[in-house]
Length: 385
Image (cartoon, rainbow, N blue to C red; front, side, top):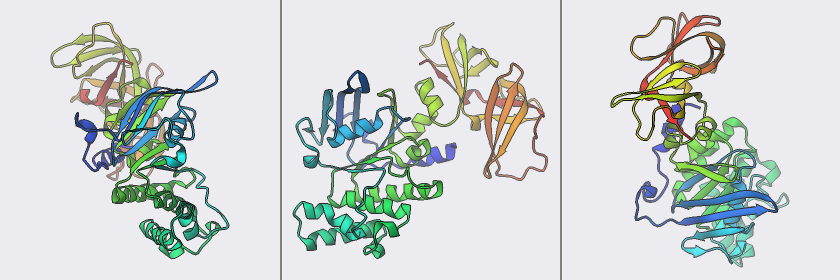
């Protein structure tokens, strides 16, 4: 993952009112208040508090078993919280059954009826609600036009590609005009290239309709691309909520820093905090200079994180930064637009770095070369949790 992808996502707000989470007077569309879900002795969701605003495309991001799908199912009404309260549009959902909630859910499997045509799949829920055939099929046609499948309405699901089936499932979920659409790993069954293309289709559709989307995913790049904000989950807790740029550039804990993208983490202790610079003595690379940060005391244990793309690689010792370490190139990976390096430091630590391939290098750094790795003080982040 690169900063280019991250910054592109963070600057495109999806909410009807841009960035309502920054407005103290804004009223949340969804309020999750101290929600816990237990299955016997196992706590799947642990005292979660979260506000989501109308028109957001919000991503719950985490690894397998972190509780994100369970939280989504509680919003849908398929699971009941052991403790806590969920409000949607000001209404307590505690006694509201799934079919009465202003929500719809799109599952990873898509769950299309194989014996029905595409248009019948999309119209099915409306017909079950008692809509007339003319009204249901008119709405189905409208949704198929939205997802660019109007020409395939008579086909059966098995005659479609994976991406087309995904869009049919999305059209069916949106046909009933929910206030909130819940998507559980919606792109997980697609190959990488199709998944990337479909992400932008989801954004376009969400922005066109203005419906609030909550997407569950384990894919960091997907969350970065899609979301207005991300909630990072682990062990049933939400450990950080923020815009994609904030989550990537300013992680609040070692877990978030290490989970989102790639990062080099150095353990150490605060040595000096001066008005213009702070020095951390690390175990692996010695002194590291960073901008000063309030609230730290001399001797305090901290981690320093530096993203691989913030590092600079050179054969000669640079003189424009105090953060310089020596090592040997152990591995190189060419990925087209960029190259990745593994640098073995003198103490044995392996450092990860990436470098853009924007220009043709006639004399590239190769395996087993002695090199200098450097970074500016502003490139590092101090983590205390």
